[in-house]
Length: 424
Ligand SMILES: *Cc1c(COP(=O)(O)O)cnc(C)c1O
Image (cartoon, rainbow, N blue to C red; front, side):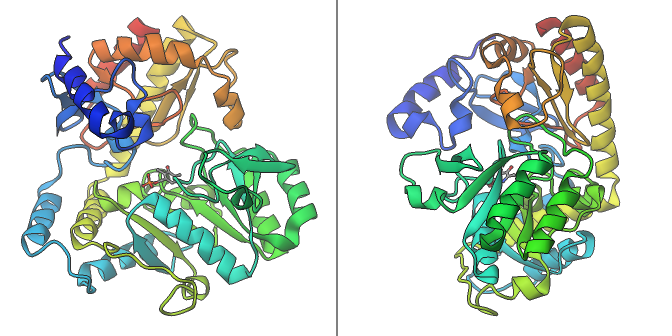
């Protein structure tokens, strides 16, 4: 497989983009990342013209795959041709917010922003403003974007920033706990209950392997936050409109958070984020309330049209049924392959998410640190390159989830399972 153009583009990129990319994980593949020329249904074509079955799918946003249905395409083109944005409100923002509020159990009002990071930043500010408290509880191995308050490492006994450039004082207000550990979070609330503004949790950890919540874990978080006057914030930036269909992961698990952050799928492939929740809390945002929040591009008409038409198409065409079926076929097939070739590994995922985690003893990960102990070297240096050579594009590292889209076919699934069989 000739990949010289990708190599040469990366060489040029290294001179003008730090690390050669605009988002860290894209540079993870060794020795250089694949530069994409274009998408085509469930595949991507690289800069050298090689075609791969694509399970990256934009790292989550592309629920419909690379071929947008006519309704989405025409809405995007019409909006773009009518002047891309105005700094004044448009009808499509109202329609999109109505769609989300209609389908997501906990959401009465929505504030749109431009990325998942912006959504979690604003949600943390809102929770602090609403409760008058500073502390936030996060999960070890959870991810809430590139924001100061959640880029921390450590545990309940103390946290420090996980990146230079973040003052220690930010981490002082953040309490990381192990996911799925009811005792640990209960103890944290016993000690700090009166100072905790919010628990911020991905309903399924989907940025470090894929880790399912244990039975009763989210109910425990719901009870603790309620008892102590803190907010429960579900970060559904990945799971929103992907896991649990149109009611999202909160619908699937039957737990109602106070606030929800969205991103990825709700922009139909364009930059987006959103915060949703009860009116009483949401109206603390300016200009209804006092918690400052603003953005030049927020509620961008092209994004809103793409997102709304994508979700409408999904609702009318059994998209979630299709992607979840293919997801199950993939996971079933991969389980057979793993049983036969590498029984120490674990097939994880739900609905349209899947991943094979290179665990060492066949025990599916229960928290982020279990995933951290996986055989990352083999995944990065041997396994992923082999998959690439056989025309399968997996996410860029062992930790990122992989995504089924509506454009994928059973043939893509078969080809992928066979490639895993060869590569494992
Ligand atoms: C991707 C992601 C984010 C960050 O979203 P960006 O659009 O990359 O800023 C936040 N939370 C979760 C759970 C995510 O998966």
